[in-house]
Length: 138
Length: 335
Ligand SMILES: [Zn+2]
Image (cartoon, helix red, strand yellow):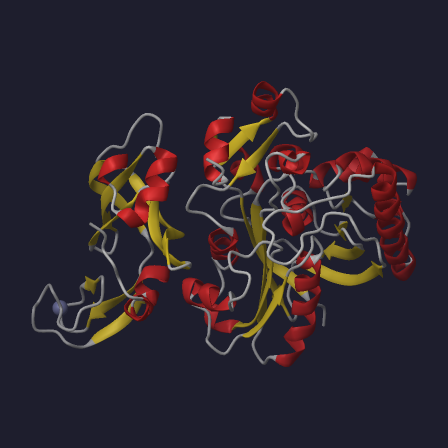
């Protein structure tokens, strides 16, 4: 099953997808990513300062998606790589986010491994390239 | 007031294919490479551009960038305003003056020279030049064997300490049939007449090189380093020697044998590599060539230390994973 996201909807999330634009809650000071209407930490803050996340973090958990299990928009990637790793990363500003891992180390992925965000093609649909971030070992 | 490069960054894809892979799959390799860089399935000239530019901007406030000049003969779209993607990915101002350059391996120096001019049209301090390329040809043609991929980026300041731009010289003339691609085609072709190709290259490049020496009132010995176009290293070496440059002057800017022909980016990646060992006061010449044919020669002087790039070319050359020819064909979407 594919996760179809319309182009106008994708466009609205370009700052967070392209450069990890997040928001710092003015009430509790914590960083929300992706941005929210109400702070997910204090559940009352609605005022935010925009902040750009560093993209640095550590692997909190991971899994490997086998070729056959890939959603259709990632089929080209799966056909080329056979399988690809997906990591849950705890960013140094606090939020945890899921993305693919590129250039995985030959000795295997480990929890706690340091990673950094990289700008890549996520998939292509209707001839339109959807860019976003993945992670790479530091 | 001297316009100067005040910081730079570069990027070489993680994947490599060795000369031996071509020889074991096809029986021969048509290029003088040891290995070359290959973009992964999720990379293109825009993602490489973001990598290099992020490093170049490491110590720079993106809001102070007033000019963005992009170069690639292989943008991922034939028509689409590419700078929009870079503005969002790098967090640049939406009022940045933009300029796109493509069409040949001369695009990099065209973007660089355009950015120097556009700096006069903005009140902001910096121009960002990004050169990212990955030439393509059908793997069944010998042209593909040498084609690699890389990107680099330079922050130019209206007035700053770093790599001062001293001047440029150009040569332009008609030589059809060399490294060309008709509209709609994805790979380049070449009529493959060696003597004609050499004549075009030698006439064009020697004219821009002798032009810059004359303009600057210098002799080859005044330069610490000459970075050649590196689409054909054998021709580069022979011409540099004929013009009076020694091997010690061309060595530091060589990247072709480990990266391949990265189109309009190769001489600029060579410049980044040369900067890693250049000292204050030393002069560098960069020479570009686009088949068809045109050439630019640009003269620089390192008038102050440059911040070390977060990822030096030397370290990018070491960070790699080798792939086989079948994997290569998958990445080129052949199988
Ligand atoms: Zn809060």
